[in-house]
Every structure is written in C-alpha cells, then in structure tokens.
Length: 251
Image 1 (cartoon, rainbow, N blue to C red):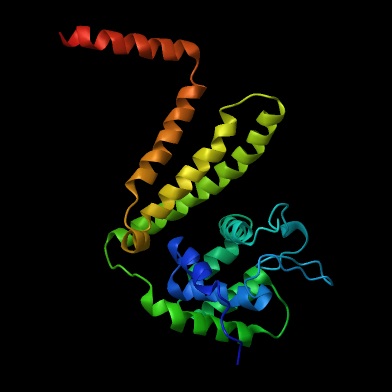
Image 2 (cartoon, rainbow, N blue to C red; image 1 turned 90 degrees about the vertical axis):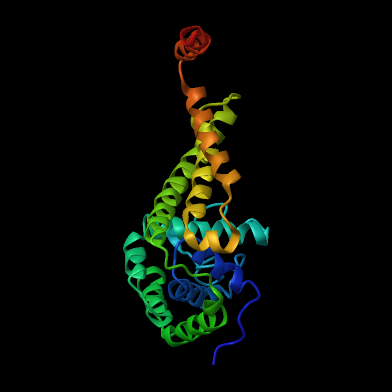
C-alpha cells in the first residue's frame, strides 16, 4: 500500500484540472509524480542525474527549473509539464486525453510520458486512485454545452501563451542586454496574458473561481499595447489625425 499523499497533492491536482484535464487524467499525472519525486520539485537523483517533479533526464532537463525556491519551482515545473504535453510530448498528451479512469491515465503517463521502464506501475495506479478518491469527487463539474468550447479555448490559448512566453523570455533578455526595449520583448507578458485567458475560458474555473473579467481585459490590453508599440510612427500619426477629424465628420 503506498504511503500517505504529500502535502502539495491537491495543489498539483487542481493545477491540471484547471488546465483542462479530467479528474481521472489529473489523478494519473499526480500519481506518477508522487512515485517519481514525492512532489518535491527540488529533488535530484545523484545516480542517474534525473531531477525535479517528473525526474527529467538529458535533453528534457531545462535550466531554471530548480532554483531553491520551492513554491516558484513547483509552479514552473507544472507549467513545463503542460508545455511538453502540448509540444515535444504531444503524442503522450493525445494518449492521456483518451484515458477515462485514474488507472488508465496512470498507465499512459507511466509508459508514454515518464517511460520509467521499471515495475512501479501498480504503485502509480494506487496513488492515482487514492488521489481520485480524495479530490475527484469534489472537483467542480459542468455539463454545459460550453464545456468543450472552453476546453478547446483553454488548450489553444494556453499553448499560444506557452510559445509566446518562451519566445518573449528569450527576447526580453536579449533586449535587456542591448540596453533597450523591444516589441519582441513584450511577448513574454503577452504570453502570460493569453495563458490567463485560456484558464478563464475553462468552465471548471468558472465554477471554482468565477470568470476573472479583469484578467481577460488585462491580457487583451497587453496585446493591443504591444501592437500599438510595434506600429510605425506614420501609422500612429494617421490614427491621431483620424481621431481629430472624427468629431468634425459627425458634425
């Protein structure tokens, strides 16, 4: 029988549910990560070199995932899992999307995403089932026709946000090194805004936290601001002239 669930279990479970995964699928992910790391984002395997929540190895390790700040590292590593499942590990993500029970989800994550190659599947399935029994029944659910729309919106916006966030982070560093600012550097903020929009589009979040209208408008404002900053001066001048002439035309 597996040990008691780690203290961060609900936080990790909620993160995946809020990002579009069903309670069963979220439980399968969490069950595997409990087996891998005990949900400790700072843990490293001194023998294999594996590190972090999912015990990443080799080319799947990324700089900055372990900084010593447990809370920040956990959040960043959870977002990195999403980035992989939507990108380099999209085949694993597609297989996980077909899982309907905690055991199925745990098996998919074990064989496709973790590729652990050991005999721990049974323990992972037990963890997944325990997570599901503990938190799954209390997960806000909706049968609204908007559910699939929100799921698609969440996935698309979240994926775009991840891509823009990554590009923007690199570009922002480059811009900072040059001593100036750039529209490309704003992509990091735009990506964050779009990711927030994606989470708000998920109906599960409507029931749990309510629609955060201010966050959506803020994300849209970032996009508009960035587009305005990127516009040539001539375009800005034309817009200003049009605004001045509009009252005259109405009169």
